[in-house]
Image (cartoon, rainbow, N blue to C red; front, side, top):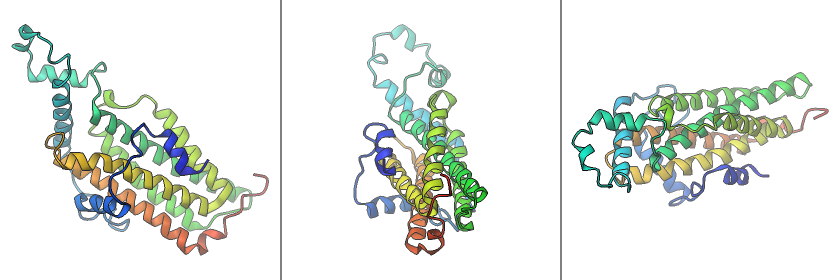
Length: 266
């Protein structure tokens, strides 16, 4: 199954829909991205974010969504007079708390970044295997994986620092396994060109997924979330840079073609 079609199957319903052309979506990423994230060369100097503010924005978005539910509007006036801010905060952090739109999106972001880290780990395992059986890939493929895995790991740490454990999917082991396979199989069978095509397809999907959050949040449809938009736009801009890097390496072709054939016996 082609990588892009496989992503359609794995993605939650509605995630694949996008708004605007590819150029317009990329422009929105770059518009909100902090300086220093618009190229891989600048990614090393990562911007500072106000993480307590991001956590507060997530909490306030959940609170507004929770207030609109039927259970919140139920006539329980006797409890409202003693229901404090800290009670609401505890309700948000509880394992039994309801999930609303942004909770699901942020959980999906963590799952996606977890899978992305595993994609490059799987690709590196494939590169090591091919080297062991006498069908090595160019060194640029290994460098590509290390550089991009470092960026994806930074995204994952950033998101985990603002999303409570109770608001994360329990299917992360499955995402790790799927990501590892998605990195290993194309690389071991198709070499560097297959690796670059896989990354290009994955990052195209990830960009669209982030845009489905950036657009409504930046428009204020879910309240004031300016710092969260900065975080998501930073991640999105680096994903666009990863996609463009993979596409450029495919266009150049020369360093990758040497490793296109599968290793003997695979």
